[in-house]
Image (cartoon, rainbow, N blue to C red; front, side, top):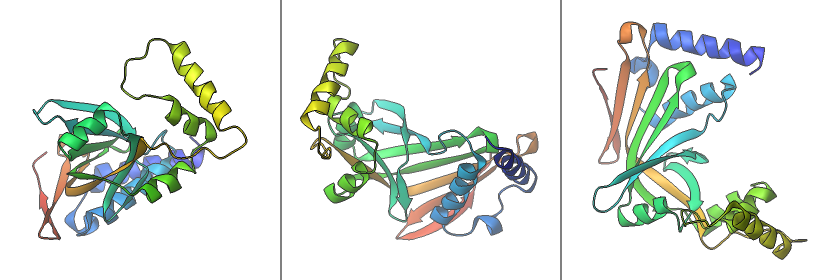
Length: 217
C-alpha cells in the first residue's frame, strides 16, 4: 500500500468513525452509495477490494458460503463468474436466491446484499472471459469444479492438455462457464462507529422503488 493510499485509508476510516453514515450523505440510491464506498476501498490500496462472501442454499434449506470476486455491478445487480457444474451453481439453479457480504475491516465498513439470481448472457460472459489472463482461461477449462479430484497431478495434466489444444489460438469460452447476476431486493450498509454505536442503513426494493430505514446496531 502506497503512502498516498495509507493517507486516504486513514482519512476515510476517520470520516466514517466520527461522522458516520447519515441519511443525508447516504442518499436514496443504494447502488450509487455502493459505488462510492467501492471506490473508497479501491483507492485505499486494500488487497482484493472486490472480494465478497457468496451464500447460497439448497432447495432443502442447507446453506453454504464461499469467497468470490465481484466482477461488475450496476442498477441491475452484482455479477460474478463460476463453473456452471459447481456446487454453488447447482444450488443457485435449485433455489435462485443468494446473499453477498462485502467486508472492508480497514475502513470499518460492511455491505450486505440479498436478492434473486439469474444467469447473464453468453455474450456478456464471453466478453469478460476474453479479458482474463490466458492461464486463468485454461484453468477454467481444466477444472471440473467441485468434483472429486484424485490428485494434483491430474489437474496439472488437464491444464497442459488444454494448453496444447488451444496453442496458437484464442481460448474460447467453455460451454460450462459463465456469469450470474444477483438482482438485489435488499442492500444494507454498516459503518463502524465509536462505542459500538454503529450506523446501519437498510434499503429495500418495493414496487420498483428503494425504501431506506435505519436499524439498531
